[in-house]
Amino acid sequence: MNDKVSNAPLGGVGTKLLHEDDKVKIWEMKLAPGEDSPAHRHELEHILIVIDGDKMAAVPNVLAGPDAQYFEADVQPGNWYRQKRGGIDVARNVGTKTFHEILIEIKD
Picture 1 (cartoon, rainbow, N blue to C red):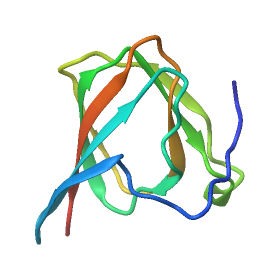
Picture 2 (cartoon, one colour):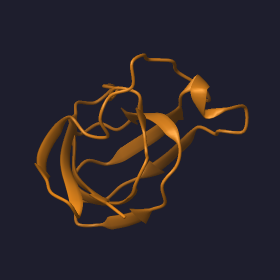
Picture 3 (cartoon, rainbow, N blue to C red):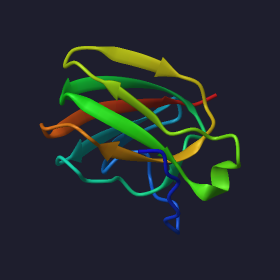
Picture 4 (cartoon, rainbow, N blue to C red):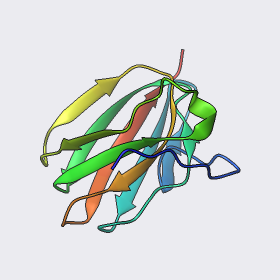
C-alpha cells in the first residue's frame, strides 16, 4: 500500500497528551488494528517507545510534498526509536495487535 492521506485539521502526535513542561511533551498513542491516528506534523525531535504492537506504517499527508514516502515496519515491544523533526503523516496500525506507544517530544 503506497498512498497519501489528507486529514484536516492536523492533530497531536499521540492520542493522549500525558505531560508537558518547558523541556518535553509526553504523549500516549493506542491504535487498534487497521486504525489511523489523526494527521499530525512532527515539529520536534522525538523518541518513540513501543509498549505493544507488531507492525506500523507512516502514511504521508498530501501537505508533506511529492517526495514523502509511505513507510511500513515491524515493531517490537520494548524497542525505542529516536526520530528527527519533520514530516506530516498519519500513523496506521497495519498489524494484528493493538499498537501502544509512548512518544516523548524534546523541546529546544
